[in-house]
Image 1 (cartoon, rainbow, N blue to C red):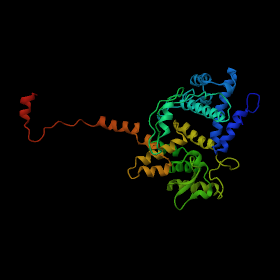
Image 2 (tube, rainbow, N blue to C red):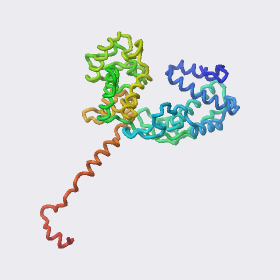
Image 3 (cartoon, rainbow, N blue to C red):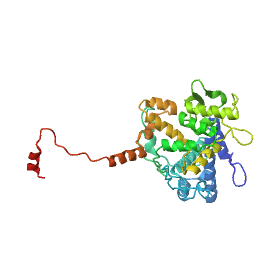
Image 4 (tube, rainbow, N blue to C red):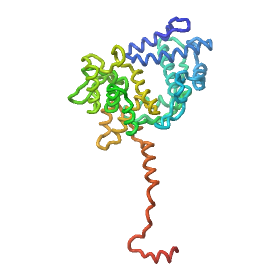
Length: 368
């Protein structure tokens, strides 16, 4: 439920969110929709425009404000934290910019378009959707086969151009440093399982005691996309750290979450606590790795292994389309620079004549 400044429920938003929940939408998705609609409602309140009378002009105000406003989520509370938009010298990863990202603006536009399209089915809201659409995109997607790649199309008005983000894999040397910075068997087991399984952060944190298959060296996770229980591989090193963690803090029950807090009363380890484990190591090493970088590292290592095919990588990463692996098939900048350094230090090849030619004849014709 979303409420206004007077703690009064906003009925149009509640009706829309209730429909999302009835269509089996993820609670986190519904939460993000609610935040976007609350921002929109506050803007309409400032402009003194009822939601039923909103037009493209108000949407343009929203986009213009988000392009220039300061995002409070980018404020750094720690004095030693890197400023927004800076580049980490050890990892080469840029930090998030100060304002709202283009993907955030596009997400807000998609939410508004869906919100007004929903109410238009019941004759509520403005006559036309205030969020403009791309006619060329609709025409291209209308008769496209599911097996065909999505063609290029012009962006809809007000849509932002998202930057091309390449996956950042952790080099072997820096990963060894990261493992050495872990403080407990639990943290080392969590890190090793992330690297060997390629699971997402929320997927691995939800593993229960009965979902660890020691014999087949795999764990079962609830996939984020399909919500199906699927197996992911676990390396012998990860299972060894996991066994040490269980031996030190007790083996969890079959229906109990295996990742637990180490201080106070044991309770399931939340995502923010797992992220804090990595943040402490980053502060020690001067890096800025994230939990999702471990998934990038797993996929990058598998795609660079000639013994593994792309279907093998898709089975482990649980990607639905081969095109999702395109960013991992591009040459890594670090590897290219390393090969270039070796190229620069190699001696120039000596110029020799092809066998059968006389050097004196060459000097007579070309001189020298």
